[in-house]
Length: 183
Image 1 (cartoon, rainbow, N blue to C red):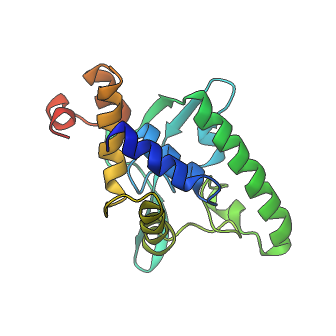
Image 2 (cartoon, rainbow, N blue to C red):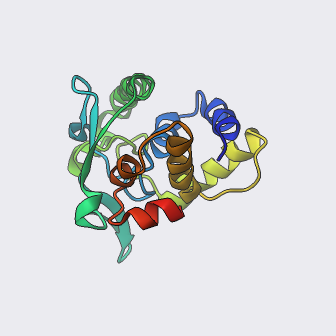
Image 3 (spheres, rainbow, N blue to C red):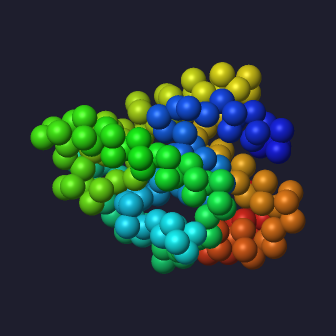
């Protein structure tokens, strides 16, 4: 993603229920399984950090919160202030959904996921995240792209903004600098 295309995409996600999810993926380069695995306890608003401690996987017909892909994938990232603002807004919206759901809310059994359905259940990656992403990409007037391209886009944008390649490597959770530079 170029800076212009990233801006167009960020404009297209404005006001979407999952706006903060797409912003986290683009600004921090999290893997598609890492974003829905975030729990509110992973975000420290005072310190401005986000901890990647688990990923959401679906196998055996059920959702599972698993350890991240590699040891390097477990990481704590600085969160830009605009993203913290978006996450605060998302949290307020989610609390309203929780109140509206009442006894149907089942988010507690999932550790209070940052990105969940309106009743607190895990988001289905393909139907709830990827398909919606395709609609937003089209709204932005961009060519088809996969959700994973947000991760690559994050790396490209960080490099374009002058971020040190080693910092990009650590942000993405890569084990080798060559992987980062190839992306």
